[in-house]
Amino acid sequence: MTVSYRQPGVVLTDRHFTVPLDHDAPTGETIELYAREVVASDKAHQDQPWLVYLQGGPGFGANRFVGKGAWLGRALKEYRVLLLDQRGTGHSAPANRQTLPLRGTPAEQAAYLTHFRADSIVRDCEAIRREVTGGAPWTVLGQSFGGFCTVNYLSTAPEGLTAAVVTGGLPSLDAHADDVYRAAYPRIERKVAAHYARYPQDVERARRIADHLLASDVVLPNGYRLTAEAFQSLGILLGGSEGSHRLHYLLEDAFVRTPQGSALSDAFQEEVQGLLSYASHPLYALVHEAIYGQDPRPTDWSAERVRAEFPQFDAAKTLAGDAPLLFTGETIHPWMFDCDPALRPLRETAELLAARTDWKPLYDPARLAANEVPVAAAVYHDDMYVDTAHSLATARTIRGLRTWVTDEFEHDGVRAGGPRVLDRLLALTRDEA
Image 1 (tube, one colour):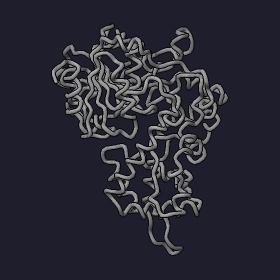
Image 2: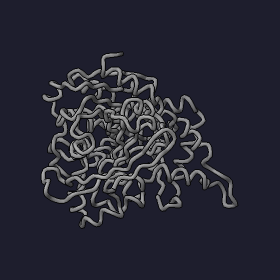
Image 3: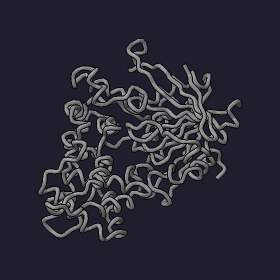
Image 4: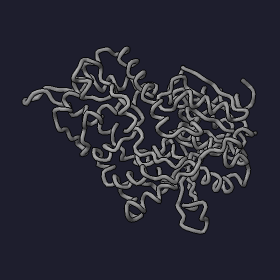
């Protein structure tokens, strides 16, 4: 049953679809997907081309917009938009500590989650496209991991696309996870240095908090064990357009005086637990490194292993001297499955995924070299989440792809820049820019 309702300027319709869990076994088990159709109120009864939006992540459901927020208003000028909750997220067969035990043992859970990468998401899109558009191709907008999915789409089902737009999400076609993180840690270090240059008072504040955490056993109200390493992972904020400012305001309110002495404030702890918890997106932690798996080598907790090659990120060693504490960024570590109550029951499942050696290739360089779909991509000059050099190397391999390289935005440019970013990229797909 479809249900339609209104928000300012838009008509929304809930859409539900049934797709195979394993598209290579179409008569086997199925899962239910959810997507929200959005159309401008004044175009609700008009025929329009479709745009499907693929969210970043992995592990996040599609944006829950109110009205025509961010880029959506620009898209609605000419498209009906389908905001898809990718499998495992939102209302689409959510995968978390509550639902995954229904699959059985950790081994069975891990086997189930092998079907939650970009290749399965794209095949979902193709399965539902026939129902949504009657078989007509559509435009895809892929943000971050959604861009990874878009490159898989171009590799496997370009006939389903009239155009493709990627924002901050051109992946390396052949890099192992180790290569990704070796490129990432120096990039993260640059972002931290830029933060301290903007807010030099945060150098001492960050050192003081980390020193406190090394000496104390701190458990946040939701049960999250806040270690120095966990505190460092707040550096993930630094990849967003407002992230440095948010981190600064967080650090300045860290301590309060109490009858027992200085302590981490309730306000600080409340905000930190919201930033660090994976309760709303556990799939991000479970399959984040798996999105890079394409060869017989396991990912094997790549970010953790590669971090050892960059000793400047070791909090204890830093505090033994006088250097600024380095935050980390978009990296997943095994200790997260000990610290976070939303992840603890899934530790063995995560270990099994990290050990897998049978990941299938996600991209087809030969097909990309022969691409005929109009494609445009925003590449952010020093993107903390997706390596710029990797993105540009991939751009050169996709026939006809036009890039917009900019330092005006961070990784969340499609949100921060909204209509302007999407307008520029759509123009590039049409040779209008």
